[in-house]
Image (cartoon, rainbow, N blue to C red):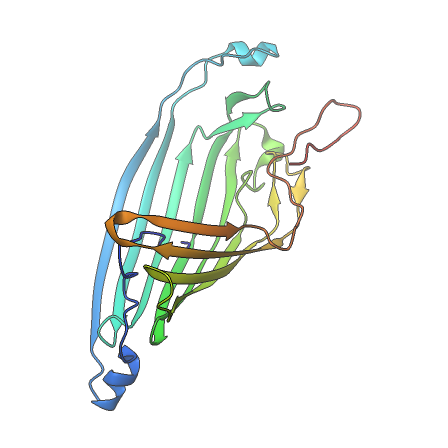
Length: 255
């Protein structure tokens, strides 16, 4: 749900010189509203197979295909001649023979962990309050957990790598300048991830953290773009993955 990074060769979509759309709509007392509602029901399939790396007797066994039933109700709304948008979706996913990775990196294998479900809501909004400025907000709030695991002690545990809350906010600003041959954009944003787990037993965890990013891009004719960017400007240390090295001492691999 991060800000749409698609670029055109000249002017950023929706950011054009001229009066703010919201301001002009309010002046004419003409507040238009468009909406679109979608409902989806689909079935997902992830094939089974054999593990290439065999670290234990269980790894020799083939793993079954993962089957999921996916339901989603979504909406797309726009106001003030698309100067403001609000999109959202409510989703529910029910999985059978959930496939998960177990073991340390380099020796990982896939196993079926049983049944699981994921449910939540996604929201995103974009606002163009003034000339050359676009604000973007987004978020995903939900819950993913095992409902009937192969190991009964995992029932109710959270799925690995699935934080309950993910939020993001950013702005894009078209800098008014004539000394460079193109359109110069300044972007800055922040991302938040809540507490998450790295294994099905939920014994390896990481608390919530926030990241800050920024970029300066020059978009010229004929699709030529030059971009200077920085990610994680706050130098926040966080884990990409984590696993136990042995059964005696639990250690985390941090990246």
